[in-house]
Image (cartoon, rainbow, N blue to C red; front, top):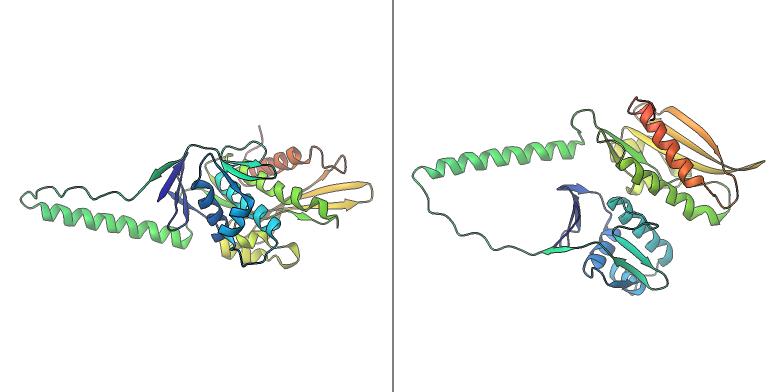
Length: 284
């Protein structure tokens, strides 16, 4: 079964998500959760159903954290937002609902074979050879990580809460998803990845060289929430991965302990930095 919604397709059998025909990275557990949501468009999938379907009844995990991670990954892949959802709506104390229209496409029966014309086998052989060449060429580009033209790949690492206060863990991690969402709409010359497992590693074991090799990104964005003497501050970083050069770092002051206004300031700062340092053009 293939589900189609917006510019996306999801193959329930292979658990592959595609955007405009191109594969979009999605880890196995978020893919299982998305499959459950798509199987019941417009209906509520309870938290318990997601737990059983993704992890199984006999598996013991930190369910709340695992579920939050899955939903975050799905929303990042879809460019969705929990505050203003286009695809996945949170139903408080119940579960989640897939709210976008979904078309289901099953296996199609093969079309009747047309009668062969004289010498048509030669045409068919030439077409088949051309198709194989295209497939092979595409596969080489995909597997080798090459990108056409001037397109660059930006990795967004999960941002770090370095205050020691766990109440900031979730909002700070959510900030990285907001930056991914904004940058995916910024310019066709850039591609953005934020849902790879290596980008979710904590700062103390993060290795920029490994990030470059694993996701083949050109740049990585990092962020840190810190406790200063006069209050909270958020540090943004733009790093070119080939030589691990800091292109830009900036310090944003957090006005209050509730992080009021931080989301917009962080997103705007990273967008400005990408325009200036990656796209080489001033912000509007």
